[in-house]
Length: 295
Ligand SMILES: [Zn+2]
Image: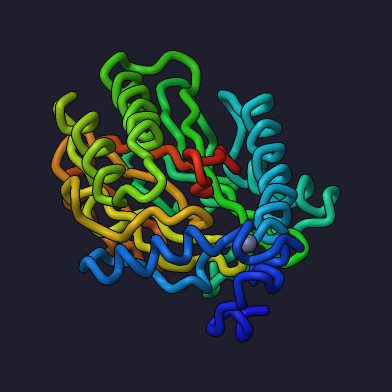
């Protein structure tokens, strides 16, 4: 399938996407529009990144597990819960649903989920020593592989009574992702999404981490495009229907700089020790907008 797609079918041949439709009734129009935009100088990613109907169905099934596991976490998380317990819930949930936690053993990551508390920007490693207490804000970042398809999303949880400014950080970060989603236009540009996210965060007086962003995802854990949150509107790749990626800004209460010196090689903190928040969703661009796959 992948190899065949470098050669486009004839108008009356079956479409490359496996829909069973004739090419002229399926992807011909989009393929012509991609070629035209590329000729105009727009940044058009390779067609092999576009997800077929079968791919999207596979990603949906993977995402069901991802969302279900995070729903389970949402129901059970609270004061006195250790992040090792969250890791166990996620592992068990995946196992019960014939799925694999994508984080486990990914480039040597030792656990099934990332749990990032307060000043931890990302890649916090679950531990029985990290027991959640009132006032903590924690991100649980979950990724699933099911039948070869990847899904990825993360949520923030406020534990007990949280300081209002921290709560505002969590809420503004959520709103920034929603603004990013609202800025998605098929055949628009990724930079429009980046700018919408950034504006909500910075208008609220917060900063956005530069070093990490979202990513394409589907058949691989990390594919193109890279989804940064410092690009300007009118920049970046074209949002061609079939592109699947995450929107996952890391928003800091203080300065945007990060500290990657933790000897475990994973855990990233804010350089100034101020709190940070992140929400992550996964979408696929459609002909008339987008489909939210994981949240
Ligand atoms: Zn097609």
